[in-house]
Length: 347
Ligand SMILES: [Zn+2]
Image 1 (cartoon, rainbow, N blue to C red):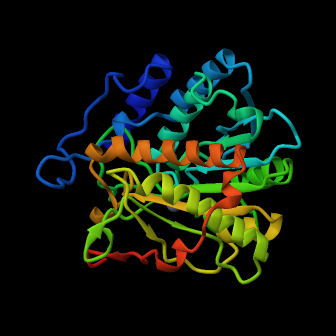
Image 2 (image 1 turned 180 degrees about the vertical axis):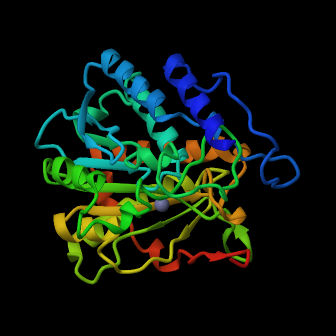
């Protein structure tokens, strides 16, 4: 039954092309997990892959400085897009990457909004001093639930399920050494090796019940590369990038940042990309996922607003601090006291 709904709705979305949030949807039954008495988890309000492509093409037509490049295809044949603002090759370059994991979509929603901002003059003068690359929705097959693995036990309602994994059920963010999958290959060959990138923020979503300081829920968590093979200067600049993001988010009423607890494996982008290319990386994990089979991983859509805003604020702050050089003055000692998050629920 779910399969049938999915087919109907995907056809509808393609015909409608470009219309987004208010598109008519074929509703599945029920309201999904109920957090706080009134939150639902529904994937129909999320931008589809095709809507994203339509949006990017429109923005490219509108924005003089923006360039759109297809850097490869997913396993299911979807074009992977890179958004480029390259003003001067001598400027520092930052890459924002979203949705290596297909079920972590609000980062992409925020990145698209940020791209729109770059075309409105809100960041006037900034793009002359920093090159910006945005790769939204690397795992488009997972984001569209167009995979060979069963998603029957995923719990969100809506017209499609979203999954962490790629077509064949593999995790792209464990493929940064072997580079087996076309999505990872496209990222490495046509972005990481093709541009002289200084900084990268790898945007994700984590479980919805992560806490610091006596059970206070976080809006997200951050971490620098923790591989022992990361160059000291690369690491220091990663920590500075973290300071920029922390200062921008934690000062907001809705922002509350913990330290992500992560391993040293270089199969993970945060570590592997820092070591292989000398890029200063920051992992940013937003609160809660768009879909999952575990209830304590998903988050009701009432939180979408501040989480999208958190992404926009992050990208905006990073671009400005790199452009004006203030990132180089950042105090990184906050990392020593930033509390490591723990998980509230038993998982
Ligand atoms: Zn992730």
